Length: 193
Image (cartoon, rainbow, N blue to C red; front, side, top):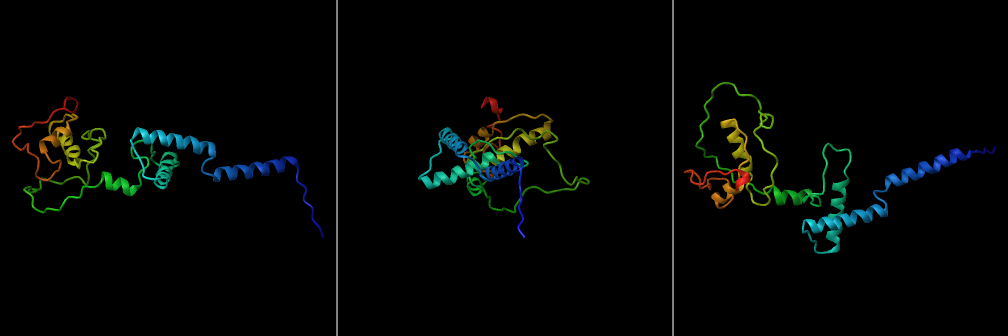
């Protein structure tokens, strides 16, 4: 017994269009989009003075850039900033590199003065300024402690000059290197230093 299926023209058109849509959505980019993105990446490379030794490195970092700038359905969005073509490992090595030696000696002696909350969100209490970029200096201590302590102690939030602290510190490290123990450096406002 032979079975014949007859499809109408609208159904055939619908099947063809569905197939084209599925195929197009499976392809990451069409050649026109790819060329536009490559030109955009070339412009980005110039803006951030980034150069790669050979075509293979360029292609690897271009792919990272493409993925970073086309992510969808995430709780966050990546953009064309200086981190856009870095791998996670490169980012960690370049910007999260300081690993202090553990020193267990401390001059601080905790005395219990009542029950403490399980956590405190200093952002909600206004003790954290806008995000700042320390670059490769290893000066996160200057960014994380100074303004927050000032807010907690005085109730006033000011944007202080981390650069001045690092200049007074001479080495940019946190440990015991800060040379302003006697207050001779003081701390200037960020806008005035």
